[in-house]
Image (cartoon, rainbow, N blue to C red; front, top):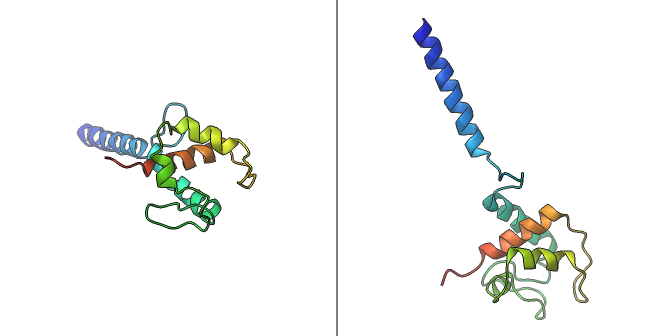
Length: 117
């Protein structure tokens, strides 16, 4: 009987550990980059698509707004530079109020489009 309890306890412990690993976040509490990039893609579709090509080989409505893949491939584009840009008002962009986690998600999505050349 004791062996069965140990086996059940071990199975429960393994299941809980697996669940924890599946939903693991970074130590600072932010989402994993892949989850964040998916959220960024959703935000880009809602906010940025009218002017920017948010996917490679997609046309934006504005010839003046660069595509996200082109932005990702610019020299010096980093997560930090994108987050700073997204939090700063610009003449040709609408003044969106973007929360820090939304800016991070958009930055992660844009960087996910970087060419692997």
